[in-house]
Amino acid sequence: MSSATHAAGTNDAPLVQVRDLHAGIGGKIVFDGLSLDVPRGSITAIMGPSGTGKTTLLRHLTGQLRAGSGSVRVDGEDVARLSRNALFALRERIGFLFQNSALLTDFNVFENVAFPLRQHARLPEVLIRNIVLTKLQAVGLRGAARLMPSELSGGMARRVALARAIVFDPMLILYDEPFVGLDPIALNQVLRLIRTLNRTLGITSILVAHELAAVRRVADRVYLIANGKLVAQGAPDRLAQEDSPWTRQFFGGEADGPVPFHYPAPDYAGDLGFAPGADA
Amino acid sequence: MSAQPQPRRNWLVRGIAQIGEGGLFFLAILAALPKSLRHLREICRQVWFVGAMSLVIVMTCGLFTGMVLALQLYYTLSIFGGTAALGTVVALALFRELGPVLTAILVAGRAGTAVTAEIGLMRATDQIDAMEMMAVDPIAYIVVPRYLAGVIAMPLLMCLFNALGLFGGHLVGVNWLGVDNGTFWGNMTATVDLWKDILDGVWKSAAFGAVVMLIAVFNGYTTSPTSEGVAYSTTRTVVFSAIVVLAVDFVMTAFLT
Image (cartoon, rainbow over all chains, first blue to last red; front, side, top):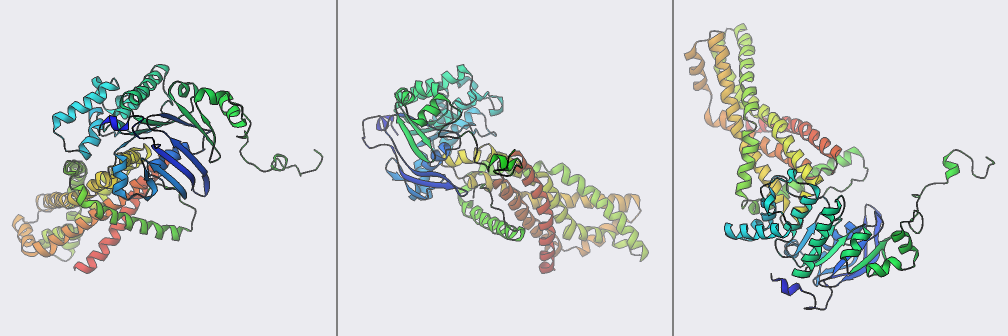
């Protein structure tokens, strides 16, 4: 698959279209009419308070979860309606970076990156070796090819996972919390990689993250999700200055606001054993 | 069939639901069987893991089982003056019953738990989801090779268990208690039938391999992704394997004899 076909501007339709998505897990409503578009060739950040279903949204995009109602379209295909084979064919064009990297612990770094190639393409060994080494070189870990996942630091593991995610030159990469637990050096390396992959290969990127400073440096557009809906959207710098209760609380880090500090609970005085209305 | 949190239900309903899920999982394994034959290298690796890694424990237990059998049966037979039949009884007890059952329980403890914990940890560390995301069917790549490995390795391990058991029985009966060597082997080879006695044991053993590994892979695959979840599933594998092996043993014995 040539990277040129994914480059921005070749097709104006958004790569990802979510329309009126309703979904829940275990009786709890996660999405209550969520709609958003991700343009081709962009870096889009999905932000929001913990537990608003950002990771769940990524799982809807890849068909790991299916919507109650509404539609999720990726490259024009309605993900929830795809057969298993068609879904697998779509997933071959999507890279997914798990929060904990999810490297296969039985294999070394080289074999981890080679794994998708070996499973899906019948290539001569020498070609596999060259592709894998090219991808490892891109993330700066060609020298670590023989290490086992248990010998890698968190930042290195994430870069190996990134090399594995791009081994098929995908049209879309989904990053689930790519900045969590990274030291400033590793954070910068990952940021630079996300940007480079986007600019040079034209890979559309969607990242779920909490780190506003990091998101501002890399994302073209931010979607703020809360209570199952889209509450704000726009360029990160503009959004941080917007004066809505949601953006004020989220970007200002205020403890109380539309996202309450207290988890829903019965009356405090009643819980402490005082009769409601009685003089304490 | 991912590890979704289960709603609270009556234990009986939950038990029946589990059996149903196990059955569906078995069908998923059968459906993925042709696809997984592509992963021949992985199947061989798993046969080595389940088989070769269980060799020492199976052989040691086989030796001692044969020795104890010979001691106990010598005592019982001597009451009736029938110690000449020692070789026959030891061999029949091993081939028809103890070999398959004890090997299955040992393999459940040694390899079954390892498989459950391994798949459970893969679930907990998102490796199974990662495979799904790389468009690789985890049932075909992870589950089926381990399942096949158990079915292939179990009868082979049982044969070794029996061989070592016979050796142990011979050691105690002939070398220690003084039963005549020719009588021991002669009576045994005259009475034990290849098709009826030995192959019955092999069928049993293959069936035990199939149920033990089904329990192991199912518990691993449906583990809730926490450390308690993995510990709980591992324990369940041993407990359920022991119960199911003995129950299947009864049913198969009733039909085969």
